[in-house]
Amino acid sequence: MEAIQAIRGTKDILPEEVVYWQYVEKVAAEILEKAAYREIRTPIFEYTHLFERGIGETTDVVGKEMYTFIDKGNRSITLRPEGTAGVVRAYIQNKLYASGGVERLWYCGAMFRYERPQAGRQRQFHQIGLELLGSDSPRADVEVITLATEILKALGLESLSLQLNSVGSVEDRQRYRQALVDYLTPYKGDLDKDSQERLTRNPLRILDSKDSKTQEIVKGAPSILDYLSVDSRRHFDTVCSLLTDLGIAYQLNPHLVRGLDYYTHTAFEIQSADLGAQATVCGGGRYDGLVSQLGGNDTPAVGWAMGMERLILLLQNIRPMTPPGVDIYIASRGEKAERQALIVAQHLRQAGFRVELDLSGSNFAKQLKRASKSGAKRCLIIGDEEVENNTIQLKDLTTGQQQTLSQSQLIGFLGGGGIRD
Image (cartoon, rainbow, N blue to C red):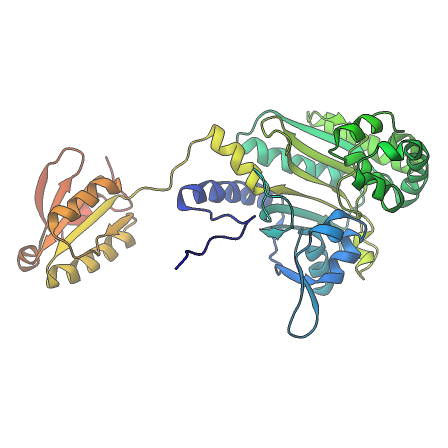
């Protein structure tokens, strides 16, 4: 019978790699919790119209990439393609705004998009993200950007650049949209197919095209920064000034628009020079209209998301990591000895040791070979004779030396709380 394979675009995260994931999650959680962000966990599937209304029906995510199905109740359901819409829905539904003030939330989990799989991009992928709801201050924009840079710095990542832009208010974008269409229309025949379709549906997305010929054309396009209102310009200038105060370098990128329609004002990406074409490790911005668009009160908000797979790729190149090893391996042979070994293993684990108990039932020679391969420093050997005498054989797997201990001596001899060398 043919073995079943993982679905294309999904990936098993094996134990040797999980250690990287745990490290990233731990670093991010510690930094975000110090900044008063609370973790939220939302469902991995939602009603489809949440994403259609929130992300925008003219986006590639909604139009081409969502995993949507009809469930047994004849409802259209979608696996979440991003985290913000679900967090905002939870914010509204659970009245997290009721206490007033600012709500700071963060999340970590799997997302799903039907894209062409490549390094750092899978159809099931994972993100760490945060959302700050309830403040329209430029300081909120800078706070979330600062936290992103702190996390990446704490992970030890280098060769990073902060790309910064403002997409203004809805009114600003309407003025800019017309100017952009006027510029691009004479080049319509030279644009890539997707950009030709976007020219009438969502022209700002053309700025994000990866087609080389289209990229050359948009180099001469007008800048959205020239179409900002006085208030939008003041907001963006303050963001830039505060980043400078904090010593956070940035590059203005007027072609940065992000892929989701809900963005307003500040938009940013943090990119790595070590990732090739898929360079973005963190992206986000302000989305002041999304809460009201999804049925809540008019609430300003700003946030970002980091791609876990891309962070892991970078970490694997700079920081070799291995799963925690075994302190003690226990070999046992004989019915009474095997029962006793189970009790000893439990006591040692409660005392803080990492213990692997051989469950094979094979002879001592084979068990000792496995003990040597396990990476443990010491092996406990228990046979029926040791049970009768209430003793244990302790073998140092580094030196080969072996000694007999009473069971009552064992934990005190080893040093409770872990191996002491």
